[in-house]
Image 1 (cartoon, one colour):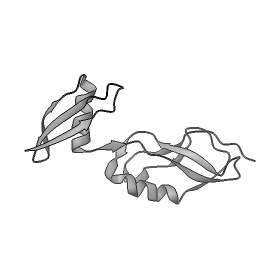
Image 2: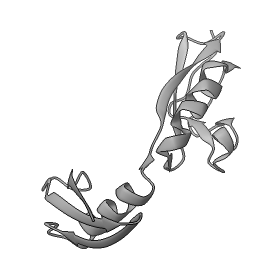
Image 3: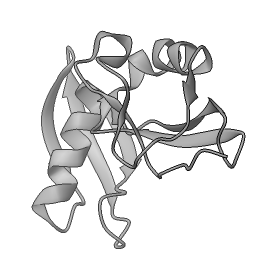
Length: 121
């Protein structure tokens, strides 16, 4: 049996959570003070997920880069492939907040969107 120790990041409590696992399956979760902590621990041990935030190059904009974010979490194991795609992107101004910059980033089914508007110079 494997034991994992986590600190929950879903709320400000920062509970110390202990997860007991066997053969890749969660057997028990303890130490959480709310149901969100248990859900976080189970997800983190089976398939960790993260929101990707970064910047892409932008031409003819008032700044040289545009902040971007995924619409929802993507698997942590896809983060490197997603960042490789982000590094290749250049967009043209103007861009509005929530415009889709990349569809289906790294084959996750999740879009990368602009997290701010950028005017054209």
